[in-house]
Image (cartoon, rainbow, N blue to C red; front, side, top):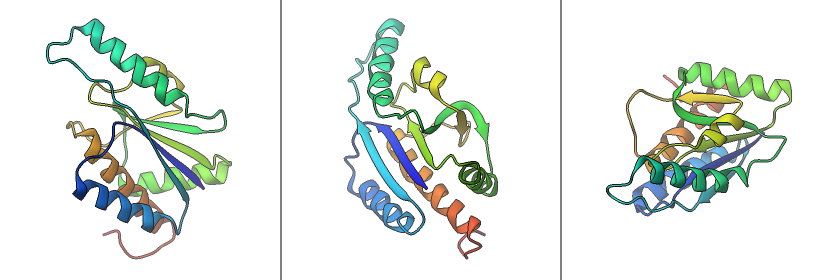
Length: 159
């Protein structure tokens, strides 16, 4: 299984980099993981809705450049479907069984994802109705994917 994590922005905080590196290492037993960072656009403090739309569009263009035709795209979106850890494990397992072995998880910037990226998504996933920093969301997503693989393989970790 090939998993790509396509995200907007760079991680600056050492503790987040360390956590991402730890899950990257753990996941290497189960899949090939690729993390692609798209530059984030600076959002002015009092950006108009038009400016925000332009920013999301530019970030979306950067994301779409990295999505290949054979990828099953999962966009993290507040309007997406919420899954339990077990359901996410089943979802990943089912994709592999169906032959969708190239999965791209997409995390947008602080303004979210463009309509073009959301239109390209095969599935929209929501982790919570709460808002999380998009940098922290990378760690949360990688931990849940790791947990999913442990569940799939019947290995201890999930409680």
